[in-house]
Length: 491
Ligand SMILES: NC(=O)c1ccc[n+]([C@@H]2O[C@H](COP(=O)([O-])OP(=O)(O)OC[C@H]3O[C@@H](n4cnc5c(N)ncnc54)[C@H](O)[C@@H]3O)[C@@H](O)[C@H]2O)c1
Image (cartoon, rainbow, N blue to C red):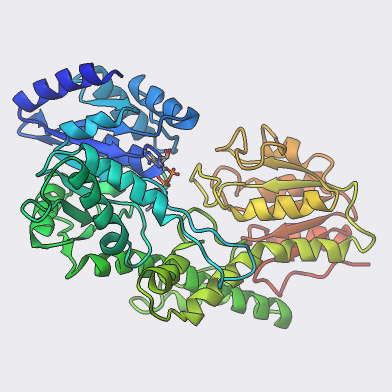
């Protein structure tokens, strides 16, 4: 939408008592933030007029066009996103999209949800890069356009030290370029990391959840606290105010590293269980009964995917070393990243071992390609690692996932319309995810479809005793992550 029109509508929204919020970046996080703010009400009135701002490139323009048409700019399988955005855009028209950065000059608050990637070669965690300079350019641009008194909050996950060493100086630089005396009138910056949980409660997880934050100074912290309290359900989920902005950065990184490390830890035990003939799922289930200390122990799986758990521990290491100039050994966290990265390769190794003569010309079916069950996000999914390794070895790969029609990261892979067509004629099956759509009927379907000599790698222990017995009797190799008790195939 054109700047002049947005300006006019924002002025009217101001008269109606709404705050003007610019959300920078309309990806997975930005989409949920726009929808959540647009639906926020107080005394039967919408509180915010929300402008979604993305880059002026083809993907950015497409997201903006979707928002303007009342659609979620980024697809996530929470239907309420579409409903809420559709309703806001149509009437009361308090959400719009643009690629024109001049809208920042209208904002009371700018929320940055842009991506900040970690760059590294797989198989090592020592040589790391993170394009913080690109984020600084975005912050400088915000500083160049925003009015003094605007609050800038950042929801992106940041390397340690990024807020005070990179983003704040860039924001100040932008303000200075605009002629603002930043000593007299310093800009306000807060870090309010996002905990949005991909899945069917995506939207609700923005405001019906514990939120933590800190500002660059007391004034920024106070302002951020007041702003968050307007849309977070603080009665049920009181805000957590960190002592410093760096502590808030560490909060997000530690939270995700803790989870990634727990997953790697159980992977060690999965391999042990397979070797010594034990069903680790059974063992973990019994341990999880110890409420309070052990009830969130992980189960084995194909690996760790998604945009966050695969990088966040390394963002801490990168920031400490490169931005703050201190040692950042983090040996357990780094080891966990490498262990997790290897998890999907175990499936490929098992398949190679089964077909001793090589894999060229075989047909594989991958069941589940997103990084998490019930989440329509394929970024860094472990299934992609399996698919790429199999294709490299000459395997024809097909895949089925009820949430995915086109595999964006790997469009060459044919997506089947249902599990049965994916499995037809397959010599290799990898059960990559335990999606509720198919987990109950898949064992029976496998029984019907699999031929002698084929192999099933089940990363989630979906197999039933009946399927295990069928495979053993009919010369079908069955490998189950974390299960050393699977009946051996009869010769
Ligand atoms: N996906 C999640 O579930 C999740 C959860 C918590 C935190 N995070 C963090 O939030 C951040 C964003 O993640 P995401 O998954 O939404 O990423 P994403 O890649 O889906 O979206 C980023 C968006 O920002 C836009 N963008 C990039 N640079 C821009 C610029 N200079 N100006 C305007 N727009 C720009 C991109 O075009 C894209 O639309 C990351 O730091 C991520 O680690 C993500």
